[in-house]
Length: 457
Image 1 (cartoon, one colour):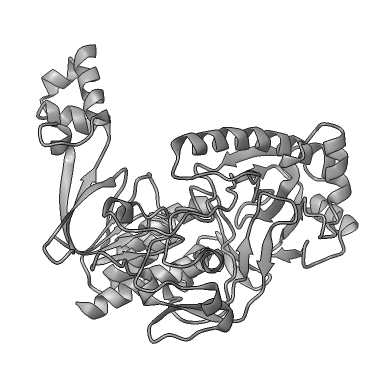
Image 2 (cartoon, rainbow, N blue to C red):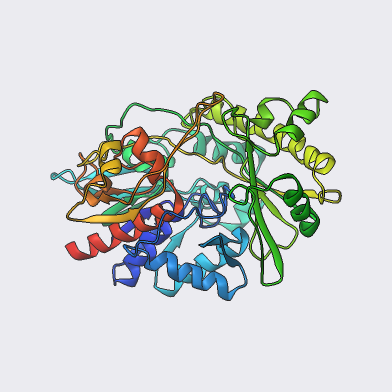
């Protein structure tokens, strides 16, 4: 029996679990992958974008920043403290959550839920779809039998994992019942809300991205190259921090922007080294604690991808990896400093900007955001712009706004009393969500929900 079960160990989920446990709540964190961090680690979505200087629900982010700095895996660049090393982050998050007593369950997901008569989630049924789990449970951990499994016996176990759950299936016995008072859905795609039968707003799309990292770059040489071709320091800032060069730069195929790198990309397209779609979005950042490494916020898939469709996601991953190879070769051929560079890491997950958005107790709107509407129980204060990527040329939007708040009611499921939702799948309209989806705001959402639950107990 837990006070809180957090499903999803990404940015919002780790903040929620840490804060809940730190406040004395018995907390379980369920994560389907083998590490925490979500978009930052699995998706290589870094750095954390600066969403303002408000102090509302920033304790977890500030403590994480401090812990990462102690490991030499964080820098502050252009006033932004969220430049992290994604590999070290996996370790730091483990240590932080264990230090306050969070129980972490990797390689697990929620298969079904059980409600009480008040429409509260009473139990979650966790599915651990590991072949070893199935074998051990089917054959009662008998080592003699397990050592001598026949091919037919192994196939039976595999078939069990593929079988839909029903009362007569062994899959029923592979499910672990977990009782809880509150559930926080931090899955990004609102998987728990979907299982609960919650309503969602009509799906609208932003392009997805598959990020990657290149190592072996002569950063000083590349910095000099950038200075020579781009005098816009807002687009291409360069700074020496702790004896290391740090920088970023960008280019898109949008004709409305006077990108300094445009002639280089056009030359590569004319030579057949890049496709036009490869060039639709290009952005790079140095990585804290990784001299000679650049993280790429690209390629961006120049079409709509339904991230709830296995077929759509599979096609996007294959397409993106092909583009990564072309972009890497482009950098080596056209950008000074990349002569000995190589692809060192490709993200395990697509960078997803929008997916399911739940119908909550309050629908937060673009008008609320632009007017800076105030609320009785705000979970964050931020000023990150409305950032809508488009698959069409000159179709993207980046609209600056003032400071805004988000109410706790937008993180409450309308139909399930003890279900909270944090991250990109909150109750917000499409344009408002496009400002709220960034990681710094997600950290605040997770922290705020945990504090709110603590106030109810």
